[in-house]
Amino acid sequence: MGTFQYPLEVGASETGPFVSLTAVVDTGASYTLIPRRVLRDLGVTPRGRQQFLVADGRMIEREIGFVYIRLDGEVRPSVCVSGDDDGTALLGAITLEAFGLTVDPVNRRLVPLPYLYLLRTG
Image (cartoon, rainbow, N blue to C red; front, side, top):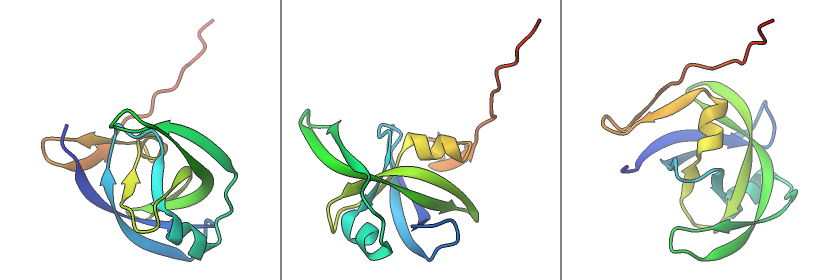
């Protein structure tokens, strides 16, 4: 699947302030990745470190934290990975699922994904 870009806003709290970014939509990435300098400027506190397998097969270790993402006016909390200071933001699968969105790769856009609930019968 090809990638495309999508605007998002990131903040340290649900009420902001928010910083506008253009992120690459990457369903192959579990978590959303935000440049470290943006997280630092917002005052986001790292909550730990985690190892990640990158596309070229290397294992890297990055800080993770919690942010609020605003997409199309809706705000949701999300785990994020701290990227390089001047790196590209990535919009990952877990954040997309939190918004109930999936990718339409043909038209290069985000589309609503029906939420599924497990119901107990009997």
